[in-house]
Amino acid sequence: MRMKALFAMALAFALSLSMGAFAQSDSGVKQDTKDAAHSTGKAAKKTGHKIKKGTKKAVNKSANATEKGADKVEDKTAPK
Image (cartoon, rainbow, N blue to C red; front, side, top):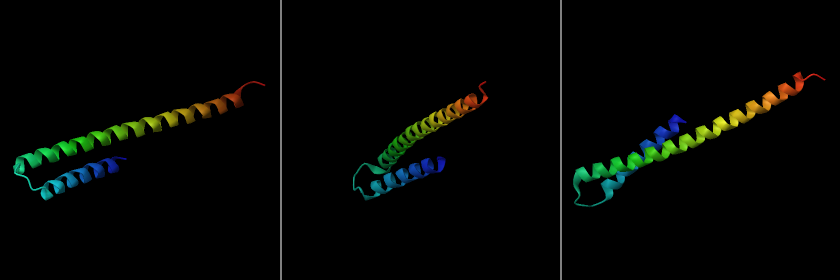
């Protein structure tokens, strides 16, 4: 999962730099650097939110499966 996050951030950074190279503006290198940093920050934030959501989903599924298994054991150990 971390590999996907790093790949997404690297891709966003590369794309933001390449977009700055194609744009013909008088804003200069300083503004291009700021724009790239903002884009990278947004990509990192979005990736973080997706990772958080995925982790939460995995934890909930694991808890559900554990509860289901506990119910099975309880049924087997209950006196007849």
